[in-house]
Amino acid sequence: MMTTQHETEIVADEKLPTIRIIREFDAAPERVFRAHVDPELYARWIGPRSLSTRITRWEARTGGAWAFANDRDGEEIASFYGSFHEVRPHERIVWTFTYEGEPDGVALETLTFEELAGGRTRLQVLSVVPDFEARDGMLASGMDVGVKEGFDKLDELLAEDV
Image 1 (cartoon, rainbow, N blue to C red):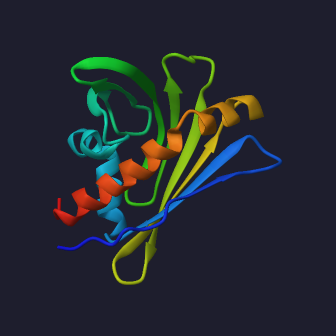
Image 2: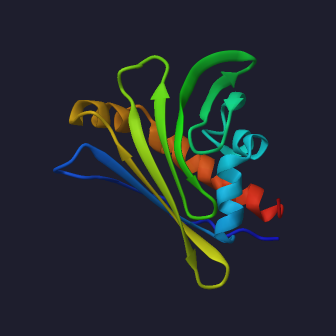
């Protein structure tokens, strides 16, 4: 199955410390959602191609917790953790996202999975961070590369019909 490369839009609000990420996928919402809650699938696509992801905790349910580490050549270089605040199948996930190196920089993220014509999905992620400094630091960290490459890997995974 051939995949279409879609543009990933990353928008920083001028008035609020937020980042909005918008991306379309050639798969139904339930499949895109599953790739966000199934730990084996999530580990296969999240982050840049230069890193592998190791899930260390995963309770994809309202009130559950999660954690994962990024490795390069077998060495851990970053780890992240958070809580699932709301998991509404095929529609929405609300979770916190924290980089272990900045434990006070908790982001509250809302992911919505919108059904489009032709069995496609528009994913919107709204990330609310504590302040503009934290937001600008995230944007300057190269997170855009990880987001874009990760979504490209998700396209490839969805093309495998998982």
